[in-house]
Length: 599
Image (cartoon, rainbow, N blue to C red):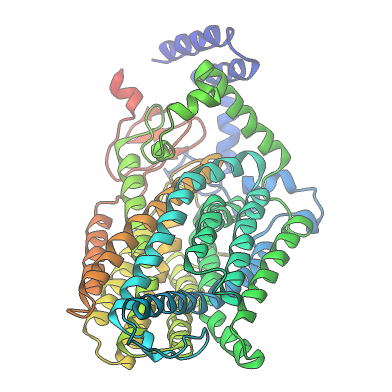
């Protein structure tokens, strides 16, 4: 068997001589693997203190798939770098929190701006068609009770749908490209680009809020256009998670991603309260948009001058060279005109269904199902966010203060779950970090899957509560229950990254961003359409449908199996385990790679 492997490896070297120098090196590595490289493997085994397959079987410390905290490969290029130039999540977290506060602070004022502008236009059109019709002036920032009618509510839902379609379709095209570019050119540049799009969006919002006669509601669609071209907040979150993945071992990513989600929902929780006080202090709602504009400028400046890049120049150059070789292999097909002709929006999703050496059925099943559940949950969140505000405005007569209070209470509960409940559960199940044995990445484990399923149950219970609530208090309680489901999103993102090598994390999260962008198009289209068709009849229909969607996600989660992962090197059989050139995969069912099946 070994002679056959040596023969195959030598054949690889002979073929590699006709290619680039990088491909020749790959062939030499293949012959090293085939001959066993016994001395190297013995040294690797001596460096591992707690083998997972018993004596003699271990993963080399610092491989792309795990290792100890002290030898995490993401830190190797920064060992001799001064502390202020060393990447860490703690550089990005405070700035991301401020960014999230601005994002959360404008949610309710922006939705109310849509209501005001569309109500003005509806009343004006009605007065033109019916000269006897009179209405009170519709002023942004006032109560405007004449706007709380089904016709205006339906038009607002249709407008938000149009905006989300524009932003969602564009971000679906852009987000995967940004994720792949971040693997080659660093995370900071892409974050700056995303923030620039949000900056332009706020400029357009300010123009519409201050001069509604000059800039009616259709002009706000330009803001959605700018947001989509820059990837929107979806791409910003994905690249931030990629930055965190660069600085964090795989077994800690669920907690670290939870910190970023906690910052996001802290912003959504405290942002409306701070915005309400700011409006009361200044006497005008537009101040909130000016502050948000300043925050985007601040974030861009800090990214440029303060926050260190998480990808070293060496890793960026390696990724660029890898991309160059891939383009050379394509030949004329790599020409941008041919790429445009053969453009496939769904092409980035190939990473969710990998084939070839190092892959197996369990890996593909896990990636597809986890991505599907993540997309369903994100789509429901995006589809429900604006509908909840519009519904409570129509059903309970909530204005800026009541809506802001609801958003703050719900997201405060979500933050508590992310920053307290999630780390507590992780500590109880996995033990303290100081006494925790060295862990190797083998994909998502049973704990990850249990957290995901529990989160879906909480979300489903919350939306069932929305559908039966007939007063504001019960509606708020239902929102608090649903907020416990917030622990699911960071766990799913972390579980996805555990299935691929480190140099593909940005590409994977970019594909996830594509699915999120598509969900941002499809989910609001469906749910806003349901709400528009049923408002004034059975108003809670949309919440029943949302709860049923979570039921589908819950069923899908039970088909995900623990401990399936990807290796970029061909496997060798060792009993019931599958050995790769630098790691072992322990699977809960005997698997054969695609290469072995073909043989």
